[in-house]
Image (cartoon, rainbow, N blue to C red; front, top):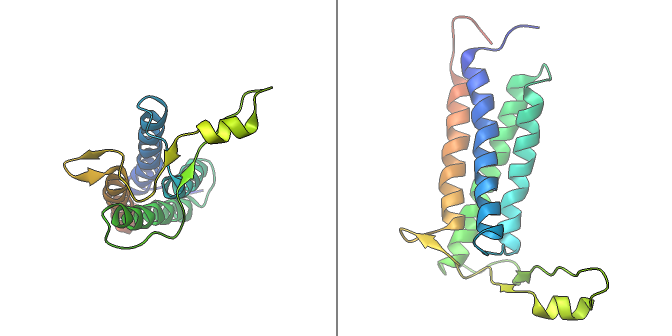
Length: 162
């Protein structure tokens, strides 16, 4: 098996690091700052889970370039969902779903009470912004930049080959 080029190895690290960082940020905002995710927030996380898995596999399987490219596509998919969600939050277009909530029932507790007491998280309202950009907007920007960086690294031609 040929050793992958430096650009391909770096692309693998970017394809692993970007979704891990964005997922970490999402979970910190959820569990530390109490910003519960809506349904579309969850949609943005799913491609990142896939990207992490593909990028991790790229370090142990021989089809490294293909796995990293697929991870970049997954990151780009999260960027597209983030752009759509940000547009819903800013009122540019209508969302596809109703708002969602997270309910957690403890053993022996009343499940109906847990559902009714769960915080309602609206998909069309940004619970937090920085510089006027919502979390969905930031996910779009960072995911798009990450997918683009991976694509550029994979497109590099190097004398040693890949």
